[in-house]
Image (cartoon, rainbow, N blue to C red):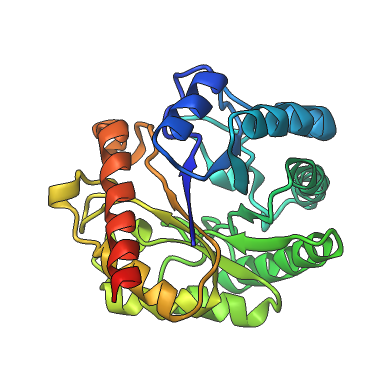
Length: 288
């Protein structure tokens, strides 16, 4: 198991400073955000020139002594009143939006290959107000199955992040979704479940179908908590992953945004706390 750090934890830093900080914190790898509106490596930049941007990003990351653990693209076309992940969701009811989302995905795959990442993470899709829940689910299954095929043809793993506001808000719906889309795996962020008061026991049932892990502290009603107020047992998570033979990356993932009051946490200090807990768990396991 290797340690990664999200490059979107420190969005106000110039990208090279961001990477130097992650390297200085002794991480092995970086999770690369490709978000609409992101000041570094925006989705729009990557869509316009996936190979060119990919070469630049890979060069900067490799020159810093890091590797790419994961690529995480999110396209948003409506930022009012806050960013709206429905606007370009893979299961959007509009055929035109879905066609564009497929084209965008092909470009993200190209970028991911150039960056030499083992895979990428996407969002699963959303329920739409006034829509038919079975249609929303069926479109999501159809669209992510197509994306699994495209990713696998390129030699990449594809995962999705269950999140609040998606069609997979619980561990049970997440497991059902994976069962209906062969080859799809989960990028697991406990925070979205813990926020809803879901126990760690229920979340851990998803570990066998996970391909990447994003870790931060959270608590019921608190999406991003400071270390001593969080309720996630990070050391227990690490022990369980090792017991199951997990060989992927585990990424410290603090975000900085107004949504869910995620801009009220000291991302630097909390990233260090998470890193230390993962290291301590690994050291404990190696000494036994």
